[in-house]
Image (cartoon, rainbow, N blue to C red; front, side, top):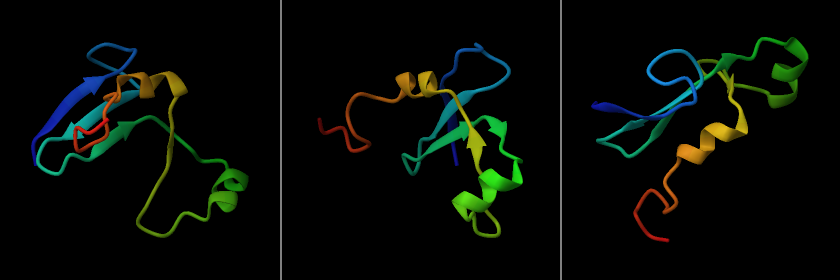
Length: 71
């Protein structure tokens, strides 16, 4: 798996950050741990998974085309 940095408002360190797996095309998000039991209960997160909170501005770094390069 080759991971590349896509963007983040904190430059080269800190959070939030957006990465891309160059082999699969998947995006990986680094954010702030969601630990509020009430929030987690509402989302019903399955075992082996987690969620993180990121500001909406992080998604400005997503490509304007979809993951297949088609508008």
